[in-house]
Amino acid sequence: MAALLLGALLLMVQPRIVPSRPTVISKAEATSQSVQKELLKKTVLKNDFKGNIHFNGSCRQLPQTIIIGVRKGGTRALLEMLSLHPDIAAAESEVHFFDWEDHYGNGLQWYMNQMPFSYPHQITVEKTPAYFTSPKVPERVYNMNQSMRLLLILRDPSERVLSDYTQVFYNHVQKHKPYPSIEEFLIKDGELNVDYKAINRSLYYFHMQNWLKYFPLDRIHIVDGDKLIKDPFPEIETVERFLRLSPQINASNFYFNKTKGFYCLRDSGRERCLHESKGRAHPHVDSHLLDKLYEYFHEPNRKFFELVGRTFDWH
Image 1 (cartoon, rainbow, N blue to C red):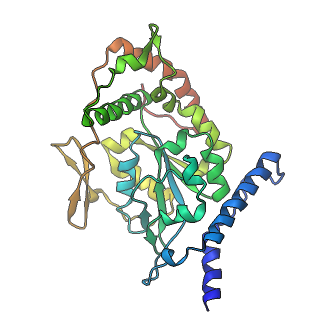
Image 2 (cartoon, helix red, strand yellow):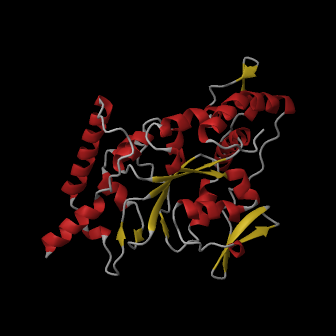
Image 3 (cartoon, rainbow, N blue to C red):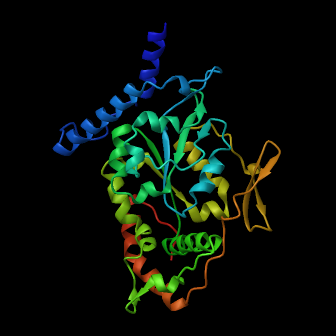
């Protein structure tokens, strides 16, 4: 009986393989398959299944959906809103499995151990915003599950840069540490500092190309982060359809909090808002400098619109 149970659980751990790439196996693909086999080998050898099954019939599962980014694009808001659906089981914290080498080296069993308990009909969701801009991640996710459904939430690239700076600035303030002004990061030798990491993270065209090497566009749903802030319900409806969920979330689940200045959630009579760190005011930036940002992102944005076949209301 124990052997049968172990066999069944092993089948649950292994991802369902759905071919979405050419059948001709390149040298790089052969290497990827070798990596996948090693990961699965670690999963089996650890044989840590007792902690992954609950007496009530729920168990830990590898995620079927990942929110891959972008940092400061609204990933936490998206996850909280999506969690209103009864068929969603979301990991509480950012796992960083695919982008941190020490985590990735632990294997798929370790990754599954970070997931919540869920029932067979539920979709397990993990959120790590750094995935979108990490070069190694698309191939690693593909190696685990070629049929993965990916969620990507984006906002105006220039506004995202300012939010990126604001988060780091307040982190330093809380630790009573000094931090340079945003102008010191944005300007170098009188010109826009394109080496600033926050600017690089907003080059959506560059990063999206890497993901499309492994996943077709119909496996990546782009959420408009600016619209999610202003009117969340229509955006969440499209996410429900993409994930093939029954329409359970409705407009009454959202209400505008005038004090905070953004939408909060209402679920079964309980009301909750995002953490106070969300929605912080951006630092004042000279209009001339903002124009430089807008000008810099204009061409990458145009290429991104062509790449994904849709436009966004960005500067």
